[in-house]
Length: 191
Ligand SMILES: CC(C)(COP(=O)(O)OP(=O)(O)OC[C@H]1O[C@@H](n2cnc3c(N)ncnc32)[C@H](O)[C@@H]1OP(=O)(O)O)[C@@H](O)C(=O)NCCC(=O)NCCS
Image (cartoon, rainbow, N blue to C red; front, side):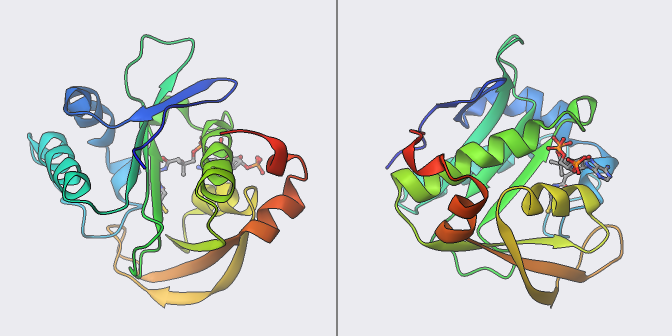
């Protein structure tokens, strides 16, 4: 299945496109974002970092790998990408199956919680999967809170080098059961 467009009350999640490169370059090239990420992300961020990243991801998708890649746009905005979520349900990766970031001016408004709730609906209702794993470095309180608010259950610690110098990372499992327990109406919502 191709990445679908998903609407929430304040956001439109639409498939990543090469035309998102300038906005992603501008918003993602920010130490306050990248310090929370694994060292697989380049830093200093190259001038063509976003374009290289998008081209690679689109190639992987075109080659047939199951990966859903959204940019987040504000319904009240001009359509510019202000964040990104990727979800690889089949990946066997220590970093887990999902990653996300949001442009700093939009933090702490509940936007990522809103977006991830919609992606959980997509995962459990549309794709019909049973569970997936997610991770964050222990110092990343915001990411932990998003996970806790969207049905993730703590599994244990793994070692994964992050840009902030820490490697102790939390691993979480999100199951259909934990998501529906938290959101009893989610089984009836369409995504
Ligand atoms: C993680 C991130 C996407 C959160 O986005 P967001 O839209 O600000 O998150 P929300 O507004 O939905 O907040 C969810 C919870 O986290 C809390 N929170 C948000 N930012 C926080 C921060 N900097 N420190 C502590 N708590 C924070 C919120 O208060 C909220 O908890 P609450 O309901 O108990 O108050 C954003 O901070 C980000 O892009 N960070 C950099 C990249 C990153 O860390 N990605 C994840 C890697 S695992």
